[in-house]
Amino acid sequence: MKIKTGLMSLLLIMIIVAACGPAVESNAPPTAPTKGALEAVTQPADAPATDVPAMATEPTPQPDMPEAYPPMPTAVPLPENYPAPAQAVVTADPYPEAVDGFIWMLLPAGVQCEDDASTYADLQDAVAGLTAVSVLTGQIEVTELNVCAACGCPTSAHYRVQVSVADVGVAQTLGWQRE
Image (cartoon, rainbow, N blue to C red):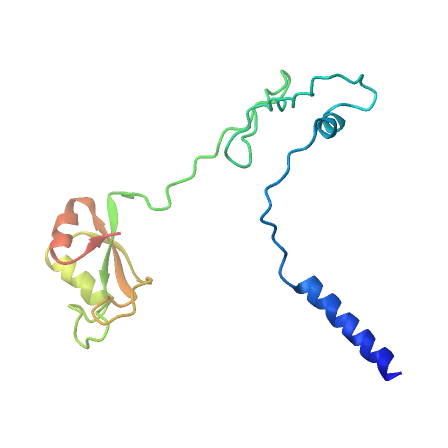
């Protein structure tokens, strides 16, 4: 019984080694097929036998395929009785250049890692600084923006004020930036 188990184990190991072992490489050059073998491959079985070997045929030309994937769709004309598309809805610019003669301007509320980096204590103080130099203002608010999180970067809180188009240059000299 032990001999049978030992032989079976040896046979199993030999099969595994043969299956998982390296491939055997042959250094012999490949041989060319004989004339009869070439004719058998290239001629149909019902074709008459000839002394001239059959020539390999050129592949049939394929239609030009675009290099981009997927191919561009082709335009299909609409039928004559197809209804005309509705007019495109013109929406207002979400960030208009000037609304009613005012432009939104921003000023950071402070600088990160600095205690007293802001010129103004709050939004009302910032607007008072603008009106002190005769800048006409409209709506005012504090907004949060995404900023870098390093010392010296502005805080995420920014004062946002509508400034008259005529007074934009004066506000820019005070540090305000166009939105």
